[in-house]
Image (tube, rainbow, N blue to C red; front, side, top):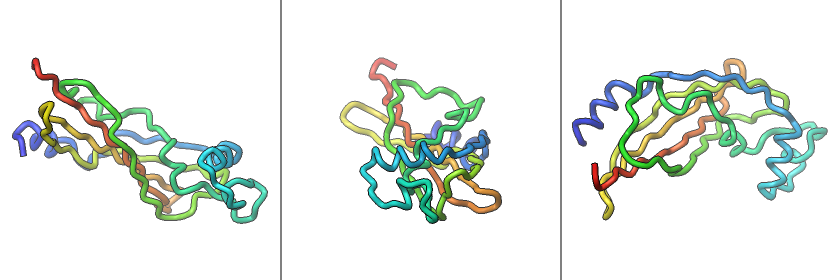
Length: 147
C-alpha cells in the first residue's frame, strides 16, 4: 500500500469524529418506504402495530461532518462511490437514534485514468444502548493527471 495512504490509515481509521442525534419522523419513514416501492404495511403505515423503517432508510441520515476536522483533502475530484447498509435490528417510528461516525477504511485502486483514493465513512446508529445499523458512505477521489 502507498506510504501516504498507510499513514492516513494509521492516524485516522476507527477514531470517532462526529456524533449526531436523529429524531425519526414517522411520516418521513413511511414516505421513504413508498418512494422505494415498498408495499408492506409495517413500512408504509405509521398506525400499523409493527411499523418500522425499511433497512435502507438509515442511508438517508447524514452527520454534521463528512471527514475528521484535521483530515487532509485528497487531491482530485470527489465523487460518491456508493452506500452500504448493515441492518442489525428494527428501527421503530418515532425513535431517537444517535449516529457515531468514523473512517472505516482508506484504500487505493489504479485504473486507466490513474490512482483513485477511496474513503469509507461508517456511521454506527444506536437506539439507546442497542446498535441498530451501520451506514457506510464510500467517496472516491480521482487524482488529476496534472498533479
